[in-house]
Length: 302
Image 1 (spheres, rainbow, N blue to C red):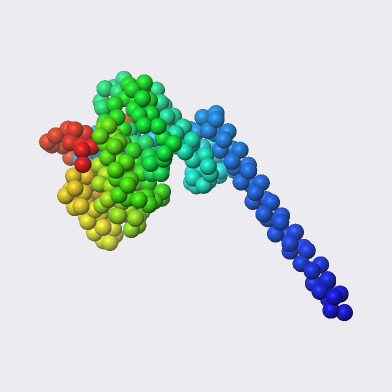
Image 2 (image 1 turned 180 degrees about the vertical axis):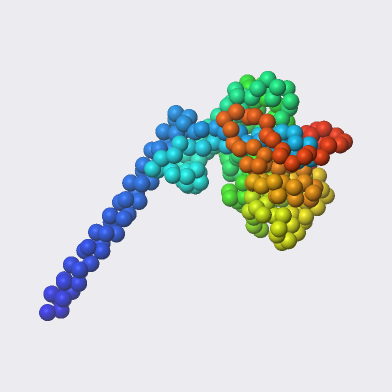
């Protein structure tokens, strides 16, 4: 009787086990499809490249463009965030990062107008922190690419995002020093969004701090956000770091940031991502710039 009961219990478990296998199989097939789609995008350079202007808020001058690479929308990657999250989990990340950096710089120079080439505007390229310190990276590879494109390293800013956290700050700072010696500059993205971003500012001493859009959203009416902004602005002033407010979407946010002394800004209120690196537009009456030029005093010597 007990054997029959035990057998009956096992039989009852079969549908649940089959359901578990079905879910697991679906997950594996989904990952396989995503990997195939990722390889197709990489091999055929199917990323769409856009450029969003960064403006000096007191003058309305476009001083830089951030390069944004977006995958075509598909069932495998409904959003850009899902695409990059998946790419970061695969063993293709190093190759993907190399392709993105090369494609970003090539397309920037191909689409930049003659006036833009002469203006000396900067180009911000998103970089996974781990890629700069990867042993597979060949020294001088990026410099050789820039030379072939006629682009000076002094015009290139590597933008590091907090989402890819740095593990060894001391070692990574040495890596950044190597790039700075070649003329590159460093920006830290998503500042103000968490403890790690503040720690990153202290250790890596970036030339640019990009404030997270969550800090900027509705800042004109939030005292806590205003106080945090002031703390970061004061730190940046003492460390000769330039602050860029990201995600500016309203005239009210822009006006507050101008009054608060934030020097640079980026967001839909100033210019949407476009397929050409065009000039942004400052809808608020700009304050006349004084003193030194827009770029010259942002040194890569830390």
